[in-house]
Length: 222
Image: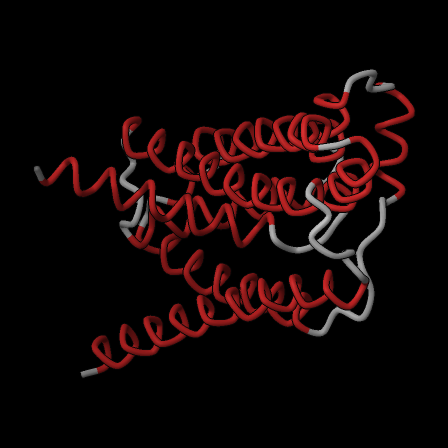
């Protein structure tokens, strides 16, 4: 029973973090919005599926290749501070964003080299071309394990990765369905509000992390 609760907690952690990562409007979301409005629900879902698969791959790489490096007590403490700073930075960045993010030069170069020829691969390549996604998962994977939200076991890590896939899929499905049904045009103002909402979520997480660090310091000094 305890193992089941631990895996459910890991899945919920992945679900929430997956949504927070996907909401900020970038090249993939813009592609889904534009092509979904022009070509319908199926095309939007295929682009989204490619992005979800690449997100899960990046998340798996973070858990298997990097999170194990941060299991020592000193490294755990360092990662707690680093994750607080990182979430605070992203939250402020998203909340104060003045314009919707376009395709970066790195993404453009990767797309020119790989020449994706299907809607699925377009979503896959555009997510792969964003190194910030991998950095996000490296920091969060180490943070989740250091806080005990995800256990350093294969089953717990897989549960978190599955939660990430479920969360990103849920967000993209709602986005695809809304744009394909023509529920109003997604203006730049609406897109920025979505990004600001994600920023608020990240700032709340940073606040919780900051409070946790303060309590640890107080308990250590008493």
